[in-house]
Image 1: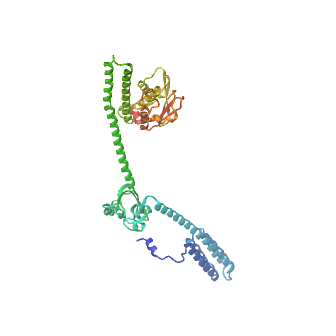
Image 2: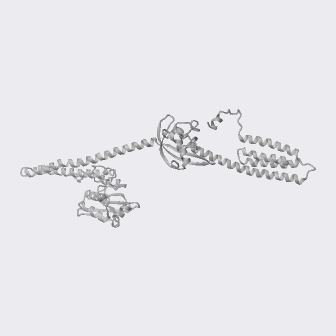
Image 3: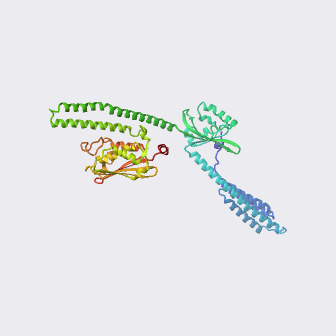
Length: 492
């Protein structure tokens, strides 16, 4: 159906000859003929015409410079003919003029042929590059004519559709489509040439394709109109998106399962924190009643045990509070997560949430005064970090510095103390749930404070780091994005 197929049916010659070799053979014959005519005709006109034809043979030569080589050979033979074959009875000026014109024509034709040959080679190189790009593209590239017949079909199309190049070229492009698109495709082309409405030109669309084995699959197709020599062609780029669709479906399923799991965890944390409080209250109340009713008969050990029981109930109650707070971290639950307030005011309110001993000094960077910060969860983060510094002090006194640094799109906050410090091997452990470096009998806590802080920071898109070593104090630094312009405008 194509010239390529017809060419394949011809038998190859036993001794293949290249076009460059044919050009050299033709040039040699013409040179011999020109030299013979130069001998037979004294004016040199016939020889000049033949030598000019020799230059034209360079059109089939391998390199453009061959034209100048043929022109040089013709020039040498023209001069040699004048020297060897000069005859009496002929006007000398006519002979010189003819041969001079011959030399000029030779080099003029050589320049033209060399120029055209260079352009031809350049076009061939570009055509080869385009062909290589088309054939090696990972996207399928198909060109059809105005009748819908396939004119070109690259290697990627074979992988996508299963048809070989020989099977596809010359056939209607509808073979690559399932019903009803297959039956309607030709009518799409007719409607386009009647209305010239570009409904499917220049846009990428998701459609269905049909492979050689009949299987149907999703693909994206973008079609462009090409005008070549008064003819209208259409070039389409297609891509098989079966794997992408499968991955999208798996991702959606994974997201749905993750969302369901998060909902289940949130529900569990809520139920656990509420349902477990009831027996804790019973235990707390019962221990108080026992202490009151048996105050006259209980010894010191029994009283100490009852107090220990109530302290463990209180610890469990705080643990449930922190567990619920951790499950809520990262979710905007009320207007405070959108409310902006001056940095100094936010830190003042954060300090009201903690128990600050008299021996502690908390220094606030003056830079907080000129900025606006979101109320929650920053208030809780600062309260947790400052409270953590106070709680782990071994002397009951010290200094806590709260500072900030502007880093363009976000703030870098830090809370540093002069306490005992933390060994580097524990820097990751302290952010895990229920992890404490000291016994809860020494430092009361659930071991979830830093986990809550880390979750809040990460949910906001920031990072939190600890810089500490034994005896050198401890510094927690974290990044926090600046408020969005619309949020800041609403707050003002």
